[in-house]
Length: 197
Image (tube, rainbow, N blue to C red):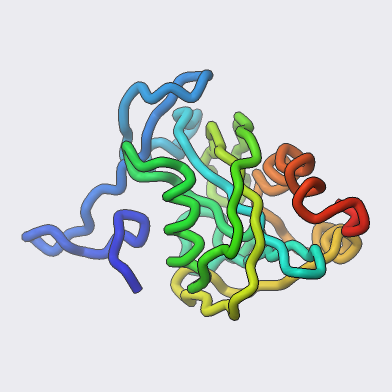
């Protein structure tokens, strides 16, 4: 697995993990600085840049993932295909493609921008706050998944009806429905009306 700030492995000369920095933004998505990842998520949260990816198979089913139990934030919950934070100065598109490969071991066969959404979602389980300016991406996946168990506990391809059932039974990330609803116009354009999104 590639070692990146997103995977936070000990790499400094004294053996401690290097700080993971996020890009702080204003309400228009303009970069105004950086903050350490965990501190940016402490209440009340600091507005920072993020991305969310929604990948679909040839049948128009959405790939969702269950976050690994070892994650510090929202462990074990289901969420969209991939989500995360660009490095400071990294283009959101590049970050989305990079993290999709790092987490799921696959590169999208198609990835397209699908707009942005701004939200503030407290996570009741962890007490952390997602205050994000989120860049949305939709695409297709055709290759076999090879999830990194440090990042992903499970995956599933779901139709809209199956997602509705799962959402009623399982715990999903606090931000999931917000980002999915914001991405729906691009999802419908990608999958066609027959997929039901």
